[in-house]
Image (tube, rainbow, N blue to C red; front, top):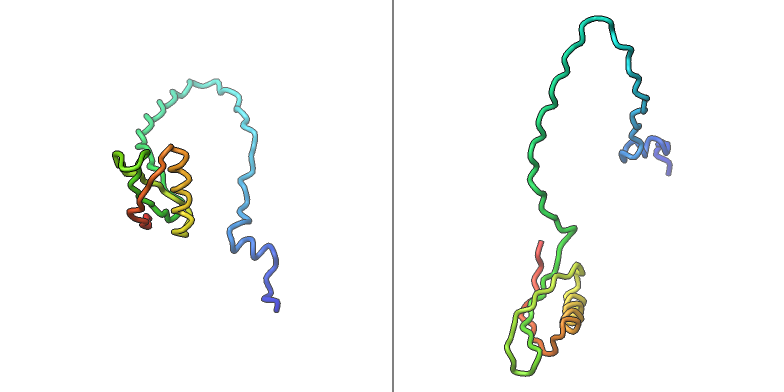
Length: 114
């Protein structure tokens, strides 16, 4: 059952055995007795645009119409769940509703958002 690979070969194949560059202490050379060389000004740093957050995976979005009192004013409640089970996502949304103080709800949709 042996393929002839050693552990080091497998680590190298998986990219886990990347040798780190050796760290050498910086040694400043003694100043020369010739004319000094002018140093270059550092280049201005480029402005970086903010990177939007990426989701780590698929999300189920649960949308409900909720009220605090029976036949009261309805508002739309949206809950994003990282769980892939529709049932568990709905249960998470109901817990979030109770925490927010809503008592009555009607499920509108559960859709997958990538």
